[in-house]
Length: 407
Image (cartoon, rainbow, N blue to C red; front, side, top):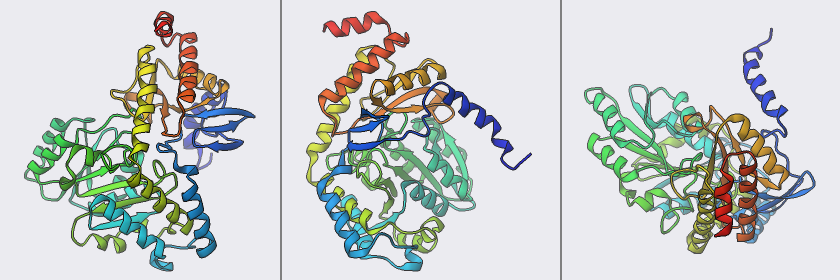
C-alpha cells in the first residue's frame, strides 16, 4: 500500500476512457499551423477546442513585441515581484488594464487560476461569507478552499436563491462576497448580472465577476459581461485571464476599491510566485491593444459562433441555452461521448471531451470554442463531421439531418 492508493478509483475511470481510443488528457499536436489548424498524428486538424476566441496567438505584432522583449530583458524574471522586483512591463500592463476597465487599480498574476486563488483566499477572511454560483470554475472553488471564509453555494444563475441565502445571513456578522462568471466555460451561458447586482445592492454585499471567457468577447469595448450588462459601477472586483482572448498566459484583477494595493503584501499566491516573463507581458499589451482598436474581431467571432451554433441546433443537437463562442453538445452517455470524440479526431476535428464530475448536472459534453480566426469553410467542415457522426451514433435523427441538407 502506498500514499497514492487512494487514487485507484480515479485510475480505473481513466483507464476506461483510454481503452475506448485516444487519450483526451494527453492530446499532442505535431505542429500548430495557425489559431484554427494543427497537425495531429500526421493529419491536418481543425482546432475547435482551444479558447483562442480572437485568434491572437499568431498575431504578428504580438509575436514581434514578445521577441523584442526577450532580446531586451531576457527570458524570465527568475522570481516573484516581491523578491526580484517589478519590471517596467509589469507596471505598464497594470496601468493599461486599469485604464481599459476604467478602474483605479490592477494586479497581474502568473495565471488566471492564480488570480482567483489569490483574490478569493485573501479578500474574504475568517468570519466572512463567500456566495458562489454552483457552476463556478475549479479555480473559484479552490480559491475559496484556500481561504478561511464560510463558502455558500447558490443555484446556478438564480438571483432569487442568492437573495434567500443572503437573507439567512441577515443578523450574522462579517462581509459577504458574491462570485459569478461572465460566460460559464462548460455551456457558454451568461450570468444574469443586472439581477445579481440588484441583490448585491439590497444586501450590502461585494461582487466579484470572473470574465475569463468574456474578456474581448462581450461588451461594446470588449470589457465583458459587466460592460454589456451596464453594471460596471456595481462590481468590486473583475478577475480575468490572458490565456483566452489575449492568446498568452497570465491573470489579473482590477478594482476601484480604496487601498486595493495592500493585497500585494497580503496575497500569498501573488507574493510567492514567479512573475510573468517580459515576452508574455509585451504580447499581452499588444493583444489588449487589438481588443481596444478592432471591434470587428468581436463581430467576426459572434458571426462564427452563430454559424456553428445554429447549424448544430437545426440538426437536432442539444446545445447550451444561448449563442456563444462556447458551443457544447449534450451527449446521451459517457460511452457515446468518448466514442463521438474519438470519431471526430479521426475525421480531423479537435474539440474538448468534458465528462462528469467536471460538468454541470454531471452531463457528458462535447465542448467546442469558436474563434474569430475560423473560416466559414472550416466551421462548415467541422459541422458536417459532427452531424455525420451524430447521425451514425443515433445522437440525432437521420431525418432531421436530411431535412437540413435539403434547406
